[in-house]
Image (cartoon, rainbow, N blue to C red; front, side, top):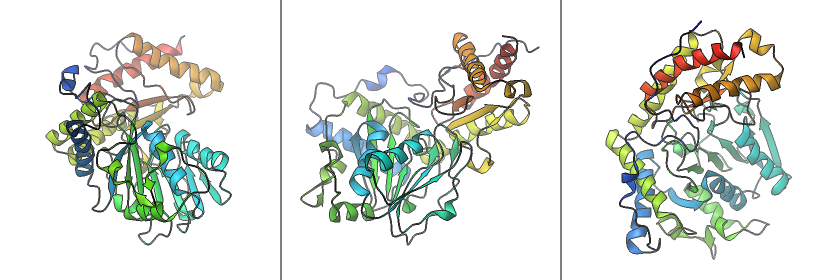
Length: 384
């Protein structure tokens, strides 16, 4: 029998989106927000541009790439890229979890591209990257948010590729060491690794992606919020603070607060170190337990942000899938009721289990305080 722990996480926020705010955050961080001002006003536009420039600087976005704020979170950014760029040549769609599978559905059923190939893998695995045809465009997620499986590196992408690489990197940026020269489109959202408020997306375009936009017109009509060119030329304003639609200046201020915090603790190296420390804490704990393991089958592919775990105990595995899912949810509910951890259940489309957010805004001490409670909750569900 395991005694109920007495130490609780100081900040029990382990959701994979919206993610935990930075340490020390309070509503006071928004005091300088330019509310009641037009986002087209000089001061507001400068604040928006500051978010863009700090994002590029912290991430190390290459010279010649552009970065902009777009509507509808990471989803809007990915859809904008696919609807604006695909169709010029064949496309390889890579997927190994829910969100990647969603992009496959959009290309096959919505855009109805006939020259699309699907390279798929089950939860816990990656597709065979050696089968990717880089004469085609390639669409993939850098980190499988619902599977906890990331690409270990981008060495499989050639520098002399003919097609574009379009990468949904929403739970990877600010937490993983990404070689952006291998990517032509990169998307993410504020509410993931940096814990910003939701609804806004970011998109980065390489010179090759810009050339495609300026030389290719899709066969289908583009909604206004997807249009990045006018008269065959890139709309520079999108990448200079003149957003396509109205942004929330509260959200802009919050995003800027997170970026300033990141700069203050040492930039990208410090963010990576914090996320890796959170993964290590969980890995060290799981290695000594016989009831839980990573969903990712290869340790090199374990995400350090959306850390997905499966319950491996024999008695649990013997249960029907519906009962397994109920037991896993029971663990989450128990700790929610104790005020120990919130929103760390596996995604609805993923295998039943646990998903603990380990991005840089989460303190390792809070992860370490959560883990004994997981042991306790697991023992509790055996008898209920």
